[in-house]
Length: 322
Image (tube, rainbow, N blue to C red; front, top):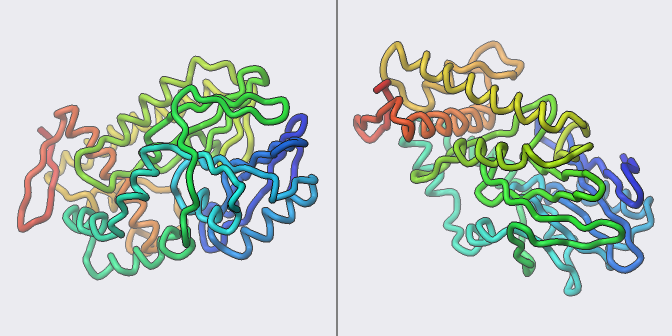
């Protein structure tokens, strides 16, 4: 559950109940003044026990600890409501702090995915199965907003904030150039690809993600500390793989549309997914939800590139090759 990565830098594996990801990598930097924890886990008793047990094992007092949250997803942000005290600094990004401030519930997201073909009878089930609904934050503590280039100094480390939008609107990584370490959140994962999803009109998350990958590729990194799965050292090679993966997915979507117009749900149903299920209908509803969001991100990218165009029939958006 606890692994020492470098001097006073530890990984704590926090279980994620009821999710296919299995666990979150929380990172703790120990310091005699104030320690730092990066990401927390779901707002769930199992996550709280695992994180507190791990901190105790490495001698970190939660009362003398600050937190950096890479992005707003519940498996990273959700537990902060149980951890923050009046003395805690919670470092976070401005774009997603604004989402919290202007939160209108899941209604706009549901309406958007409904317009893109997701069957109405499954929408409620998808929302109920969403970890953000089941294990999200009860109350958001005050946030210390960080931006590109800001530095967090803790122990022997000076972490630079690196804005990497794509997986979420304000996703932010931490880079320690002296130690050549990159705390990646969900920007870079090994063995699985980060979900790049579209949940609203007017944004192009896949374009942002590809630009964020290109932005960090020149960094000198010996070890990547991702939000899930194993740590890895193939920094530039993994970035190249992720770029190639999405280029291949874009080609796949274009090939699907070669047979005629389809909505986002129909495109997702025809894409290849690494999920153990007999067919699309056997996918868990939450996985259909995530897959449709990813299909829409690729469709949005292709639309902005003018390789496809949309048409609206009876309130449902369909895409066709242009």
